[in-house]
Length: 303
Image (cartoon, rainbow, N blue to C red; front, top):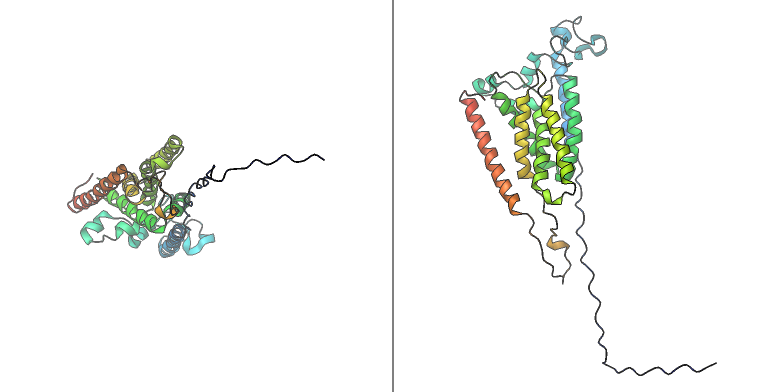
């Protein structure tokens, strides 16, 4: 076997060993989704109140068992005749008794609680079914993203906005339903998309789809006997509340607690200036709108 070649001497200090570059800072953890419980509770409350409404209505005792729909199957819970209620529900008198929106009762009798009680009542099974399907599809997603507190406030205040605009109609009438609150949730989705524009990838697709859904819901209000003023009032309230309640950090923002010690990276501000501007503007417009609407209602004015 041959001899190994001699290893050349290496002068100590001729080379300076450089430390390896630090690894990039870990990305911030994805935001955890909230567990939706408020929307299912709202769903259950609406169903329970409708059942109670039918119990109080007691069509056989007040209208006659021979005139009530599905009396043999439902007994006391049977529906009013179709010529009186085409959506399978109670009488107008029962709805009025339990808290339907009645502008005259609000102004003359001081029953302002009707602004809120009416959003928990429904005119019939068809009305209840369509609203509850919308609630589950829209509300659960929003509550998972933003939590129960903000969505609860948004739901109730949007319902109030719908009730207020409904009361200002030139020919006010008895009105019930959660449609104003649900249109408020849709309106908040639109303002949330506009306010948090930087974090969305498919912006045009998202906004066009959402506008189509909103247009279809508002077009549904053109059907006779549907209170579209409540839809519009709820939508406008929710649209403004979305700017106030649903603001997210801008794209690229990383909280200080997720940056390891020793890293010196340029941080972005949490929110952009236009987000704060939209928030303040929406808050002022919403407060002024509510005050103006209440003043007009109690002053005897209409839209």
